[in-house]
Structures are given as C-alpha cells and as structure tokens.
Length: 350
Image 1 (tube, one colour):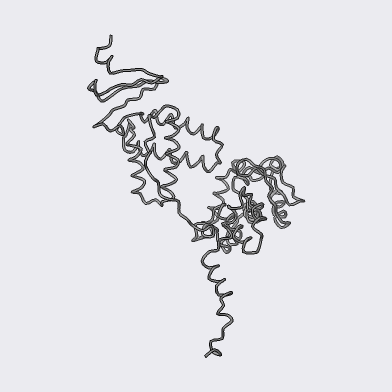
Image 2 (cartoon, rainbow, N blue to C red):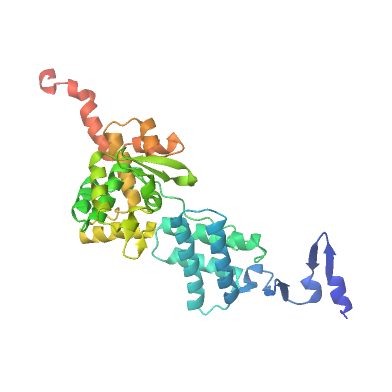
C-alpha cells in the first residue's frame, strides 16, 4: 500500500502522470516502458543530469534509428552513411569515457568536445545535424523526455562559391591519364561527359543505356527519372569497358568491381585512389566535384542556364544560376577586357 505522502504527490490527468518530487523529498525516479527502464535523476533542479538511457539501451536504439532513416526517410546513400558514422562515433566516445549511464548533459558534452577538436565548422555542423536527428527520433518514440541539444546553435554553413568546389580542368585530365584500367577510364569519361551524380551512376543499369542514341536513363534526386546524354567518344569507351565484362554482367548494373556491382562508396574510392596515385595536391577530386566542374565549364563555354538546368537535373533554375556567379579571376579578366580605359590613349591625351 502506498504511503499517504506518495498518494498526494502523484496525480493523473488527461493521460499524463505528474509526480511532485519536492513533496516526496527524492531526486530519482524509474520509469518502465516496453520493458526498458529509464532512470531520471535530478541534481540541483537541473534535468540535464538525468540518467535517461543506459549505454546498452542507446546502442540498441541506434539500430532502430538507422532502420528508420533507411526505410522510412528514403535518404540517399551518402546521407545514410553520415548518420551511421557520426552516431557510431558518439557511442564510441561514450565507451572511451566509460559512460554507462547516459544523461542529457552527455549529449551536450560530446558536442562541446567536437567544438574543441580540430574540425571545420562544416564538419561540426554535420555532426550536429545527424546527432540532432537521432535525438529528435528518440523524443518522438518516447525514449527521451526532450531533445538534449535544444538551444545549441551550430556553426553557420560556409558560403563558398561553386567554382571553389569544382575540380580544376588540369586535374581532370591528370586523373583520366592515371586511370589504370578500362573501367576506371570509362567511369571518369562518363562523369566528365554527363555531369551525373554518384548515386545515379551507381544505380545505372545496362538495360537503361541506349548506346546508339547516346542516352542513359537513371533515377535522379528525389527518385525522379532523368536522362543523361553522352557523346560518341563516351559511347566508345563504354563499349570497350562492356567488352571486358563477363556475359552475365552485361545486363543489370553497369559498373562492376571484384566484389560485385559498385556502390557509390566503391565509385568514390576509385576517384580517391587515382587522385592519390596522381599525387594531386587539390582535395577536390570526388564525383560531385566533377559535376560542379561540368557546370562551371559549360557556363563559361556559353551554355544557356535553362539548358544547363536540364542537363544537371536541377528542379529549380535558381540552383543552376550559381554557376553563372563568376569567381574572382573571371571578374578580373572581364574588367580587363571591358574597362572604358581601353578607349583612352593617355599618351595622346597628355
């Protein structure tokens, strides 16, 4: 039978149980739901020190969260990989610091640790985004009473010009020259000619490639179908690559490795490996840097923005217009070419 003081300290209304800990003169309660016990311990009135999950529980719940983002959120592979990596590193940090009972404050302590580390603002921002997503899911599923990261303002996104994200032309040529096999060379030339996304290339099927028409039909961003176009020279390298494949590999996925069809990660590793072999000093070697290079070079060659929008598969032309924003060198050259001073002969004027 409950003590009278307990009766008076607990009330139930509209599906909510309210417990007055001050009246009970205690600082710890245990809650059970779905056979999981959550211990909440208040220290000096600060709920951030509450032990809401054990490390074992948090590790198990992480698996459920990853299943959720893969199945329900329909995120692209690179986003899913980011969530997996950054939430795993959070768990690893807890383990390394011998934290078996995870409080709300520990989430904030980990963020403070990231801020002190030699990480760029962009990287810290990405960590915050993924951890915040995990925390929100835990709140929505009733595993956390509130989001422990609420109130934290992550670093602002850096405003780099799209030109600064693109691989230089000379590095593109160097990487093509350093391709050690027919497949790698075909991948580089295909990316250079089509401006495809890495995820599009990884999901591409031979059945959806029309070599004679110079077209490949893929599923683009947002699960929308789109057409990649390529020139006869690209068709030729694709044919040469296809001839190196086993008969059963000439249907289904286009790009193959020793372990099977290449994923986005596998394609990225090819770019990374060749860039290292070529001793490129510039770190902008990834597939998306090649896509940015197409937008930069096509714009400078005079391709109308509305056409470039279709080639790149942008839903909004505003996204494409960033390639029309000139970099400092382009502004300098234009000023040199169009300055009114070109019409003045200072020698004759004097």
